[in-house]
Length: 82
Image (tube, rainbow, N blue to C red):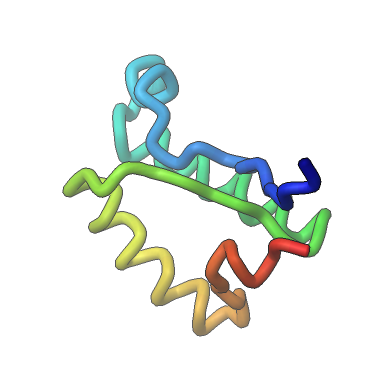
């Protein structure tokens, strides 16, 4: 059918990871974000998804501000579709 698609690399707020992390949600979000940055550095891009939970949105607001100043470029997924 030749429909372009992309697959996510990291699920930011995975319930299983949040449950198993000793530090709970904050630790799980940090770990997922570090995986995202590692993959982006390695592959040149990383697709991360998550839910609009209060904790996730607060985490992203904080981290995205610091990543932008570090030179990380955020784009819409549609910009990555071939």
